[in-house]
Image (cartoon, rainbow, N blue to C red; front, side, top):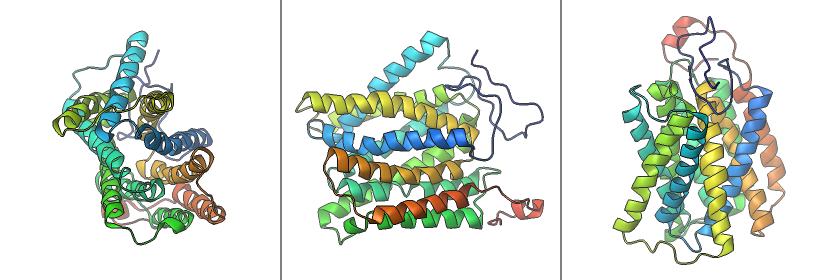
Length: 334
């Protein structure tokens, strides 16, 4: 029921996932309207996640919070897979890259969750969402056929300029404590981008989205709690309904449902173009911060949205045919 074979005549580099969360029979090289809508919803859920992390952080230490999130989501994923007869373990030589992706996944959230205890959410989200640059550059270097053209590179820069304008009030000279948090979130961005590129460049590209997500949740579910205990983190100090609800949102919506869809998208669409849409997440995050946490939203958001929309257009506009020699040379293409 969930098998999706390679379409006849598809290029050799196209993915061939055997079990997916969404049923499909074609590999695509441009972001279509359905994918754009899914990406917008994902970005909204991730933007709200920043607020949830801050709320849950009032009663749960960073590594323990991230570990509990992975444990809960891994359990949900196993139940989902068993209920549908989808295997999570196969002899397809994806174990080693899967564990590597899981370690990167764990490192990303350890860095980000810890960083958000030192810096503000608005500063942290700017540094975290430099990850698309890591993805775009890494995909250009290591993923055949996923080239970063001059036009798409310009789109990424324009979209990032929109993010900078949106958070201009937060771009002040940081204190020493804020600088520590900024650097940790930047490290998380590098880990996130590296994870995406690894999935595209390794055998994980051919693995199912379910198994890819299981590798990451399973690895981080073991590594993060052990790290929390080994480093003497305080763990759970408060368990109010609000804190539990914030953690539950992360487990059910973010770390299970949204990432399952995201990793499926990564196997079906070019990584650099998917990455451009993630620039929307800080915008949703600011909106969530304004509604939930009472943070002010300035008029710069209107300018930022215009720049981001322009950047997304540049990144996703259809590519013009290029000579094979240009592609082989590894240069930026027009």
